[in-house]
Length: 168
Image (tube, rainbow, N blue to C red):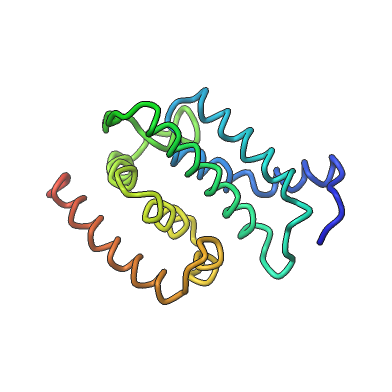
């Protein structure tokens, strides 16, 4: 168990791990205003959960777990609320800078990932964020063997779908 954050410690923690928060928020929420709300909710949950942080795990693992839980819950609420299919022509991850042109192949990959169920989407986001199988297993609460099997199957499935869309 930890004592409470000071504001400076919390700000530093957020600055060091903001990439995780933005990656998850961008992957589960397309609307800019809704994404801002999701980021706020993730940050609030990190703040509220700090006294339950288990030091056996890396901070990034703990933050991924909170961010994914909040994002998946928000995604499910939104799915129930709208009950409609989102258009696939939107780019899920915004370009890093305004001058950078997004690679259309990357946009296609993220469109395919966006169609996955919550668990498989989380797996691919964590895998594409260079997390080890051990870290992914800890974040998602499944075994490393299960992670490896699911990721290998997903990679084959994504490759097949990608090649159908981009045959060249």
